Image 1 (tube, helix red, strand yellow):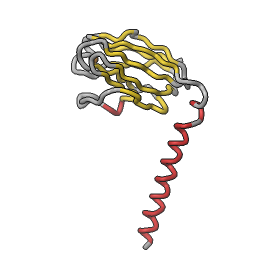
Image 2: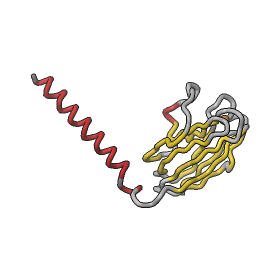
Image 3: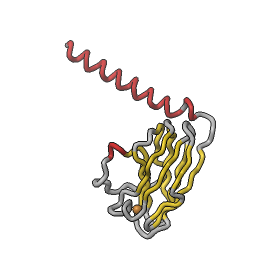
Image 4: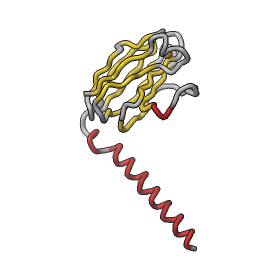
Length: 147
Ligand SMILES: [Cu+2]
């Protein structure tokens, strides 16, 4: 009987927590201003531009136009963000990537555009790269500066 009640309160707690995160997504600091679109092109083997400037707290839609002939992704490492939401893109094998360091990710097939929305929450300089085998070492890396 006691054990059952305890489980019940866990369920209630889970519902409350879930409700909170949804509320946070639909309001707060992101309310009002339309997201700013930032375009990046990807090909073999570079991103252009190689440096992206963002502001703390602004909501950004990052559009990655794959102008190459194979799948590319744009993966941001250890940049604190809120409200990350993939708007368009493909899912692919990332088994060679340490996912705990990935805070933003979007991928696009050749000729396609991937879109991801997010809000940087902490100033700093962060690295982005393509996780496809050997792409980073061939030049597919860049920097995001958050002011
Ligand atoms: Cu690539």
